[in-house]
Amino acid sequence: MAVAKAPVQTISPQVGRIARLLRLDPGEIHGLDGVPDADLRILHDQISRTLFAEGQKRFARVAGLSKTIPGPLAGVLAEKFLPPVMAARVSENLDPAKARDLIGRVSIAYLAEIALALDPVRSRPVVQKLPPEPIGKVAQELFARREYAVMAEFVGTVTVDALVAALNVATPHDLLAVVPLLEWNDNLDKVIAELPERQVAEIATSLTAAELADLAMALDPSRMGRIVAAVPLDTAAGIAEELFSRSEYAGMARFVDVVTEPILHAALGVASAHDLLVIVPLLEWSDQIDRVVDTLPDAILDGLFAEIAGGGDWDAAKVAFERLSPTAQHRLFARFGRLSKPNQKKIRAAAEAGELGAAATALLADTPM
Amino acid sequence: MKPDADLAAVLGASPPESVSALPAATLSRLAEQIAAAKKRGQAETEESVRTAIAGVPFAVRGIVKKAVL
Image (cartoon, rainbow over all chains, first blue to last red; front, side):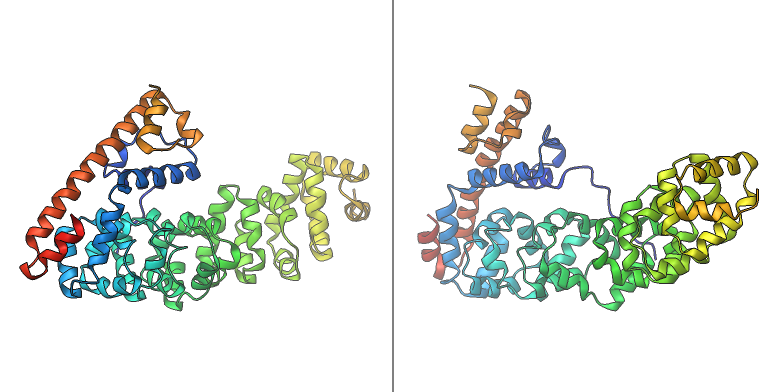
């Protein structure tokens, strides 16, 4: 089955919120692109106060009506006569228990429209009292509309149970789109740590290597660990290729503690000599890395030697070489003779000058001319 | 009046500095858009209230009217 890809965000989510508040198309808001998000949030709240301050007493009175009118009738009246933007203001004034009753009496489409207009902070006391099931249904509706920026703002508003209900209905592409927008908190950590196996497997197998690379760079490795463990080896190699091509060396190095040995092997197996020279000094070394490096194909070692000689970055070469196990160091220098004569000459000169470190100098001393 | 003053007047508060520093045309347009949205919202509220009152069953019309007018 073809899976719809998340859209590329071309309009700032905060500009989108302001447009929604003014009930304009985001394209009609000009010139705010360079304003920092924090200031756009302030501007949004200022506009919200301007638009609704005068009606505040009336919204509170309408909210108070819900105590007088029977629930079923209040639900029908609200959906029929109250535009969602105004219903959102009324909702922020509702008694939480009443909101809990009303949420089941209006359509999901109407609730989704209200959610888009809600203020995450002002609505928190009410939203926290809502049951998770309808929140999950509203989340599904909002994911279908790709309202990722709005949803991300509610992470700090909803309960853990509601967050579980919302993220459980997210497709892998929804998660890919929403994760970079999230401000992480303990609730979110808990929910991500407890994502159902089904969902983890779906993310690991239905996203492309490039998409998983995006997700990896947006997530802390500790949060990505379960997904990484579920990624097929071919895909892991593809992710590594993608990240090497983007020169995301530091981002990749963060994952060394959470990847398995086969995945590490797959990842380093697609590294170019240049990639290895850059990433090796960044890795927190372990026996696992030693085992993987010790089994790298000879061709990679030959390439690494040629890269060292050709690049002439002796500092990087020294750091990388000293990270290697004695086994790997010996393997590397056993192949010294395969280097071109000019490259042999360069490396020997650097070693004799002490630029490659003591171990390299000693090994080279035992290597026949 | 300066464009950022127009915007501040519509907002009832000074906007963030990074907003005030935007070109005059941007600020004027934003102030107009906010004022228009406010006017439209007020008209819609009035219309919603009238429609809601007319639509509610007679038995509860009195309390609805009392609350929203």
